[in-house]
Image 1: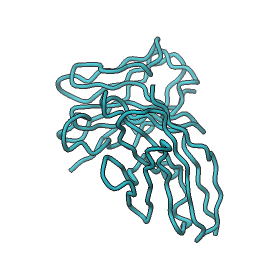
Image 2: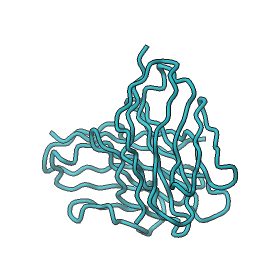
Image 3: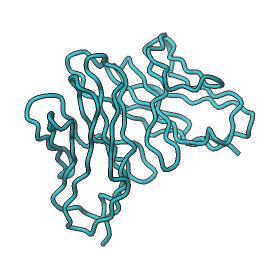
Image 4: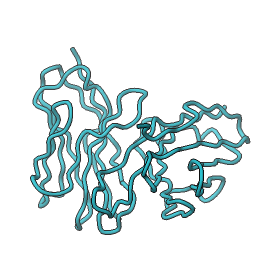
Length: 114
Length: 117
């Protein structure tokens, strides 16, 4: 069964600092990869996704992620965070072979201080 | 162009009552997924449905929980005889068929926050 690991549970950064959140998955087949963001009290919003092609994916709000197949990783990055990026970030994977459910990591809570 | 609609947004139930959570998928989406988010935890898959079919219910508790997605109307997640541990946010997502061309992921609803008192 596929699984998703997010090793950073809680990250605190100052505004303008660079961000990298780790995501690793355990499935060896073809996968689609996603990063979602959940602002306090709100639902999940899609930040970016990788299906195929260029492994460097650009999403909304200046976020990007790089798919490294050999490392089973899909880390999220942002060069300069803002206070408004304070939220919880979830990595997720779907196995395209079985086309079944989206599996989420446990999430990383990002707190950006002024 | 309405997204995934969930209602109610907030639901308070006393222990032992039934909770019914509704989810209307996006127009054109035939696949519905329910997830539960407990405080301080990530999203846990519960059940995956197509119209009139349960595709994967591996995340559903064996007792008290049931889900349906009838031919007409919204998908319903039903929790019978609720207990305090059922208090959580329940999110619904919808998608077109995941294996078909044009699939671009799931769209999530705003969730139903269930509080059991």
